Length: 319
Image (tube, rainbow, N blue to C red; front, top):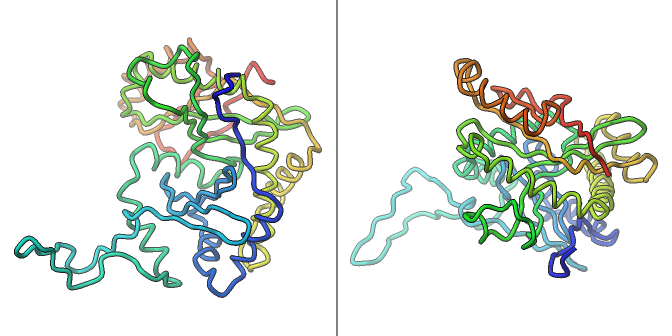
């Protein structure tokens, strides 16, 4: 691996997790308690950080230090769309009569307003991914970013300036005597890359990343499962709904290294957003050409993303 490539990590220490829990239990931790109780939000473990997603948007980025949390929210999610959202400019000065940004977090109010603002920034693919994972407890991470290597030839000339490869989601699937970790790229039917070779180049680049990082990924996602176990315990301690028994067992098996975890190095493709006419027309032809390249076992195509990832995604190759 290139020495310039940043290792892939998913980790917070036990001390950092205790600080996270203490914040949720503190009287001023209402923002975190409400986030933990909200089934619409997805908590993603990063390296020393937790990102909280709503419809593909990071509404909280929580950096966990040694003594306190530092939580960041993009200003665009803090805009209050009040009864008079337009601001008058008089003599070159904007005259504000009302507050137009959140200042103090208000229990029972602010999170709903932040989510409402975030909805405006969710594109078709973000919405589709959200619908797919909302009912799928096996999806354990989203927005999986890898630092790019210069030797991955699959990157097109238009993409050379990008510094990351970013896979949409990863799913933990029972298989054989253990679990397969399957990475998924999601595409709405409207995405033009679905109908040219860019999609194959993208999947090939991801496969190179996954193959070279298999050992790192194994360690990282065992830690992710431990993180989800810790969240489950925290939610239950606060009186919120926790994981199902099957989900709890899955996390326990992987976090405790009780069963093998195989990194599937060939990513799968999730396509959604087509209607019946498209399904039997243009998509029918394109689906066959995609399957000819990656195989039918790596393609899941549904009109409605709520139908989810199904049982596809099994790979012929694992590490």
